[in-house]
Image (cartoon, rainbow, N blue to C red; front, side, top):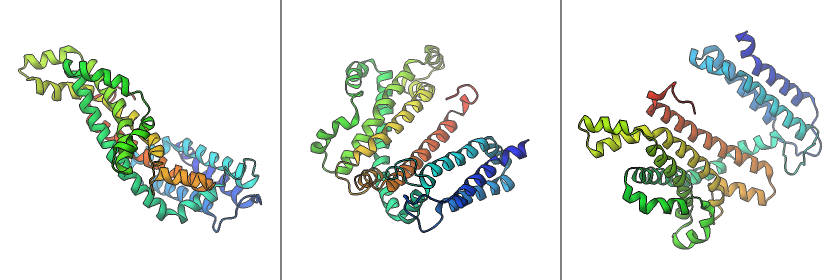
Length: 313
């Protein structure tokens, strides 16, 4: 049964390949220089089969668990290919064929790479500032009544304002587009991180601090060795939410006069009505977001290993 399940992606991919090769394309779609979709599917299937055969047991188990998902992925790709390249059911201008999108990723990879590096420069700097300031603000609000008295109303008033609403102000205040864009991204990360961190601290049982105090722990020790670790599950949820918000803000932030960046690239190609390039940019951005979120999940699992099997999120 496991062997049959493991070959579901192969069967699904073969169906997609047969339709791609033997069903003629619509004349409405631009012809590409190479069979990019065929090569893309062939490479994915080859990698899958290699890992199934020579991979570790843990890797094989994960691939087997995801086998049905991979099979459905190939069929979704197949349906999209039929609706676009084969029969042009969807508007040709706005829905290019998979071949056209893959062609952009292959032929325009150098320029996309330059845009990606520019984006990472803005994204990572803004994200890091937002996380550090959000965690610091959340800890300060959670443990200090005086700071909570002065800062908490400010967080509640300014936090819910969409970061993009600050564009007219940041363009005047900050000296460059890069700094202004980083500030907007930091603001998008700061608010959910602050709120969830302070909320996590507020939900810590007093008995934890009472036990630490009984054992002779000072206030600083109780904050950073008892309070912060106990609030980390909430803290990570805030960081995850802020990270997703930062990618939403990124596209708008790169409209402030930037000359590079994935967000700028998507907007530029949209104005040029080159929707194959738009989809290629979206794919690159989604892959970056996936990598960042995956790294955060790995970090969370490492730091919160003591909660494994206790909490699911």
